[in-house]
Length: 118
Image 1: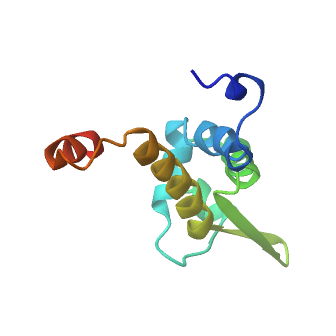
Image 2 (image 1 turned 180 degrees about the vertical axis):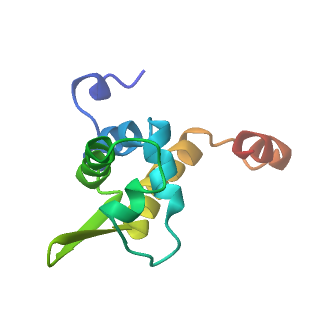
């Protein structure tokens, strides 16, 4: 048992709760998925794709922005959003590395390693 984590999370884990909580909502998942790579969309463009009200879309965008999944830039009166792919990749890489480390199985049985990763 590793009791130290009952008191405090590892330093690199502080971002996980917000990241995964933000993705815990289907609408927020859909919002992230509508973006093409390097695409920027304004609130109106995003809102027009959904049956939700503009205030509801704005709330979801705020949650995604606060969790750093989206970045935004104000231009004139419009705010443009884009996916923060590098941050998403960083968070998922950290989780992946942790899981691989904990799922480590001695290499004298390579088939077990493949099953643990799959």
